[in-house]
Amino acid sequence: MSRVVPARANRSVRWSAQWFAHWSLQVLVVFAAGRLVSTGILLLAAARQGPSPWSGPAPAYGTFINYWDSGWYERIFTEGYPTDLPRDALGVVSHNQWAFYPLYPGLVRVLDAATGLGWEILAPLVSVAAAAGASLVIYRLFRLASDHRAALAGVAVVSFAPVSAILQVPYAESLHLLLLASALYLVSTGRYFAAMPVVVLMCLARPAGVPFAIAVGILFLAALRTVRRSAVPGGPPAQRLLPLFLLGVVSSLGAVAWPLIAWAVTGQRNAYVATETAWRGEALVPFVPWLEAPAAVVGPAAAVLVVGGLLLCVVALFLAPAVRSMGLVAGAWCAAYLLYLGAFWDPQSSTWRILFPLFPLALAVAGSRNRFGIRILWVLLPVSVLLQFFWVDWLWGWTPSGPDGDYPP
Image (cartoon, rainbow, N blue to C red):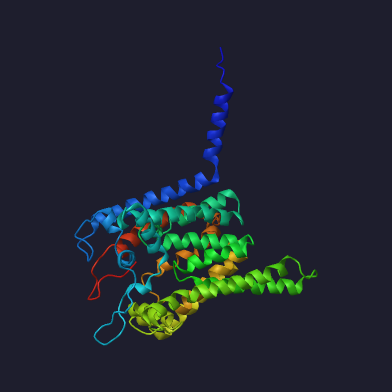
């Protein structure tokens, strides 16, 4: 005798299956798996940690994730920004809070005022929540150029990336990633005016205004070229010109907003730049550090070859079909961000973390196969997890390496 299943039960089963098949749940499962792996790696590294400037040996998880710049963000959370810049015995500006943008610690402070839960609980929660939101937006961005499987694989590449542990520590990276992905998605879907407030917030989370303005400039020139070649004046490309131009203006203003705020509060015109260069120990000279860093290791002549090789690799990267298939917006952002790093970044151990905003490249490798037909994803993910352990253990963990301490993550 067959069992009769009530119609209500059938509807419940179908609803459950549809729910578990929904793209958002799949993305969050991938994201959660990445965070579980990062948590395990952080716990293992914390157990191996010796005495450090922040704690004794084998610190608890909450203490361990509050290392490095997390302490500066917490200081902003508790003290705000100094009105008088601290200086050393020679009168040179020394390390202070102005190097760190206000949106992330400000958001935690607002939540603390509402809940009273404090930095130790709220800061990592904000980071994880922002990273989860970023994963959902990244999926939607990737779906504009790929199918569901490739987009989900791209999210996996981001979630398990060698530096992805940064998504759950009290740093601004998660919040910046959410805002950057949202801005790129809005621009990719032609919602330029909606992107403007997102870009403003992004410029208050991390110093991303300059490369984003460059990316918008690339898009504007591409749209202008299309208009000039179009046989129908006033068509869709022409309608994008004014919004793109205005978005470029907003991005440019956002890029200088924080330095102007630092000037207004401290009374020193170069307060932000002077604070940033306090970590470098020398004046900012565009592009030169990328020659000086390899020259210190292999010599000046070989350094030119190293930099030339890097440039050729970048050109080859953007000529690759998989990268070009990401779309113009993602490609323009990655090119602009690399140009920005070449001009203003001082290559050092934190470079791996600073490369994280190049996340659109994850889509380029997500669905790729090698010449044997094996999906690169199944090789890349285990390698990424292994590299993540090395990154957390060697760079996030503190190991005294000289008179100046350890290398920052």
